[in-house]
Length: 286
Image 1 (tube, one colour):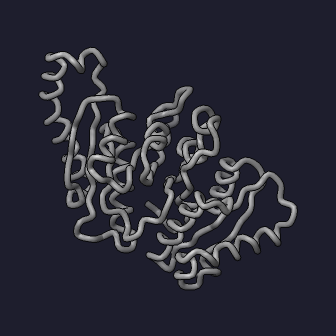
Image 2 (image 1 turned 90 degrees about the horizontal axis):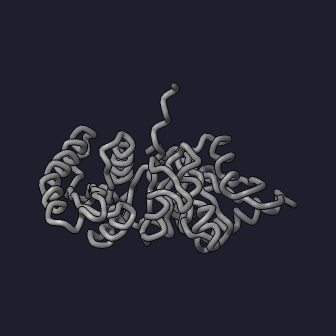
Image 3 (image 1 turned 60 degrees about the vertical axis):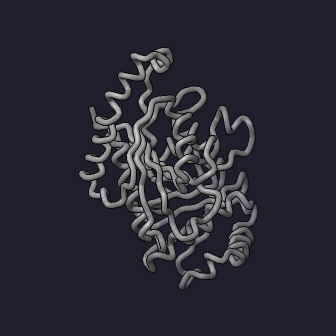
């Protein structure tokens, strides 16, 4: 996780304020970190007045006033057009290393057809995206990382560990990562004795493999539990996040997209905690 330059968007709503506050909270950990606050609008009529409004809006956010040299470390910026493409253009232009947004979809069409802002960014940008409704006071203490044993899930694990270790207040003794593998056994087989026996014989192997991956990534000291279960991946992850009391889910954006989105999209729609999505590794040139 590279948090040198955090980009966060706002439309001055309460739902976007949570992402802004988390961006500013993360910036407090190092004087070298900068935040760019971006407002995307269909038409920019008076850029000077709009930037002034953004500065005045920031004055009411406690994490902003708590920063040393807030005006020098927090820039305000504008883009014209669609929100997602505006965030992408700004990220490329300023060299953002992290994007933080509010995850709430605006309407039915965005939620189920075109995707909410966070969901679109998960698949369109090469920058890690954190979707959150509020700042993580005290940092992230219990992170659930679903694993499929790919290099992309390794990237998610590394990002989760980096966020835990780096954030102010997050390096507490109780901060931990829980690893989860969901085996998608065909529906009919899940209910048969043979299917249950097959999974039981594989579960220990899955858990040992997750433990070994954590060791290889040098984060075994943070891993407090590994669990393998059978089920539908996008359904099992939100359920397990609630059961274990996780305060963050960290995944990779590697899942392919269909008409109703991908696994990460489905998980975001069904959890009420922040979600960090690490971009998948770029495909090698053929």
